[in-house]
Image 1 (spheres, one colour):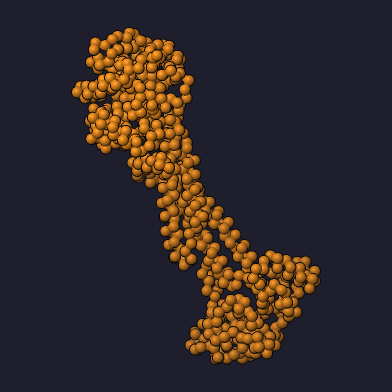
Image 2 (cartoon, one colour):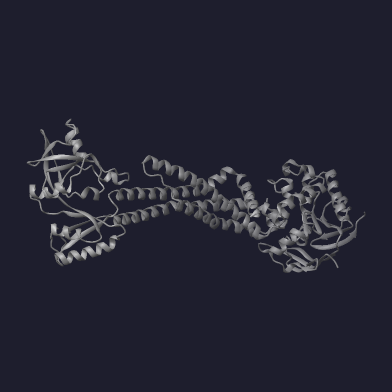
Length: 228
Length: 399
């Protein structure tokens, strides 16, 4: 059974009187431990698709079944719970909270999951060590480099052991070396069995994945095996 | 509980991120709490000191006098009425009060003043204290002795001013009659605002029987009496009034006054006034609440992105709501705390300055703190609701 099942997903935004069809009927099936890249020009609907998969947004039409559960029917707190436990987000601009240090940032999803302070501290330390930042736990985001910030963000995304990591241009703001380091973390996570879906513009990033989905004008153009 | 403190420290961290703004936001609450505590405490302290002053005359003290109303006739109190009252079981002791104005003379100096005829009970009844010498006795009253007790005012104006030493033992002339001064009474020490209303007495007290025989005064102004312990004034008031109607006739009227009911009336009036002023002070709490709401609304806008991030990693609407609500409540609680400290210090200083008994109303503190928490929750709920209702995608995209 597939982990993610999208059936004829449509998303329509209403900007004043104009209706924008961001997604025009996406049907897609993703299995556990898949490693996918979504590519396409600006405005092709990549981010919208990611947001719907990550339960940040709901489709206007169509069925989304995540791990056997029909997501399109869920309310706010259930969606929040999915975002907290089943999905981990990694953003292009890192989106760390600037006033919290690395460890506190990683602890945040654990707080929402209701984990106690002691356990949280142990878990967040472990996660930071996993991404190679054990020694930077008490630094503020502003005291970290771009690559380090993104690694904190990955540690945060992994906090509640999600099955899926969604990364929206995770290397977009990084230099090539840092970008490569980030991709290696994703590679090893995928080897551990985490499903990874990332949006990217760059072919060499997409080459880390096994399949590339090309989006064009809100529709799937083609799905190709990557050159890896 | 643990989670509460965590949320608390998180809110504190958010608020201390912008100390000046947080402080300015709290200002309304600070002023409101300060006003409530200050006003109620000072009101209560004033009430207490007035009560204490009134009680210093004897809290079970009462008086009765004849009065003329439009539909009644004036029938003065007489010695039979005094006897009648004396025999009532609930009356402890009493004294008739008679008075007239006369010149009082010593050597070549004179002063016109009130001469008051009382019996020997008067001094203990009215809680008067002797400064020098003694009060007169029942014997002296019964035998029409020409003795008198003067007040400190007389001593000052007639003796001290003219460098005549020690009045006790001297003879003064009241009108044409010589009287032997046997004592000086201490002046009444009032500590409340009543002190400003009462001028210093310049009276001369003589035995009532002497008053009758020497000056031919028979009219009793009023009878002062005290109630036995545990007797309720309002019951006595009714009984005595109706007894006097029976004794003196349906067409008469006798007025009565009981210190205990006076104190009650006075203090309840003071309480009302205090509460009304405190309510006005409390209005600034409302204004403070609106201030909190404004700043929290701005804060929601500023932290839109943060809210988006939090939602993306699993915060529910309820969690965001709670976070902002908590901040608003903590803001007003800290304001209330600062206001309480300022309120207590200024109140104590004020009470010291006007020499009242130091009093801080615990009730006022409780009211102020509970009310400002409520205000924080009430006005914080609007921004908190706004924050929690933000759509995660829109919030995340906000720059």
